[in-house]
Length: 356
Image (cartoon, rainbow, N blue to C red):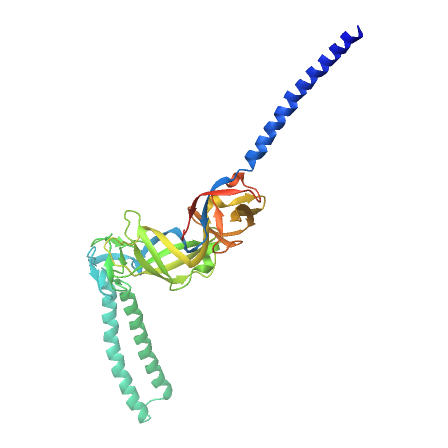
C-alpha cells in the first residue's frame, strides 16, 4: 500500500515538473528570442550635413499705385464754360483743363485797372508837387496809400479769377471726365483724375517680426495675379513705426520694370528676400524629434544612434535650418527615428550627400 502511494506521489511530481517546464521554459525562450530580435540593427535612411544655400524670403500682398496721382476739383462753385479733358491722353503741367464762368470778375478787374491808371497819374502829380512843397506830407501819403490799396484789390481779384481755372499740376495721363460744359459744379465734384504715366510705386506691409530686415534700397520682386512674369522694384521708404491694429510695417518701393500690364491699382504678390546664407545647416523636417520643450535629431556615431539637442532656425517646405547642435559632416538619421534610442544599433538603407 505504501509502495502504491509512493508511485502516485512520484507521478504527481512528474506531471507538475512537466507543466512547469512548458509554462516557464517556453515563455523564457520567447523572451530570449525577443531580446535577440531587439539587438538586430534598425535600418535607417540618413543625410550627411553639407553647406547649403538658405534664402529667407516671404510672400506678401501689395498694390501698384501711380507715383503721383490727384483728383481734379475746382476751388470755387460755378458754371463750367470750357472743358479740356482728353480722356486717357497725356497732358503737360500747367495745361488749362476746366474753366468756370468769370465774366463778372473780369469786368470788375477791367474797372479796377482803369481806376489804377487814373490813380497812378494823380500820384505822379502829387509827387511833383511834394518836391516843390506844393502839398503837405500827409496829402502825399494818402495818395500813395490809395494807389497801393487799389493794386491790392486788383491782386485779390486776379486770385479769384485764378480759382475759376483748373490746371494740370504735373505731367500725366487723364482718366475719365465727369463734367461737361454748362454743368454747375462745387468743390466736392470730381472733374477727373490725373496720374503720372512713366513711374509706378508699390505699397506693401511687412509683418512686425521681419520689419528690422527691410532696408531702404533693397530689391523687391513681384508678380501680377494673372501672370507668372516677375517684375522688379527698389524700396524707397519705410514707415517709421508699426501699425497697432495690424502689427505690420508699411513700406513703399519704386517699380523699375516697364510693362503695359502694370496698371495703377493692380493687386500684386510680393516676394521679399530678407536674407541669404550660403553655408546653412539644413536637415529634412522629418528628422526633428520634439520631446517636451526640447528638440533633438539622431545622428550616427560608431554604428549606433546618438540623440543631439538642437536649436532650429528658418523652416522651409521640406527642410529646416539648424543653428546649434550640428556641424558639417554629421550623419543625420531621417527614417526609423521613432524606434531609436540612445545607442541603438543601426544599418543604413540609403545615405544622401550634398546640399539640400
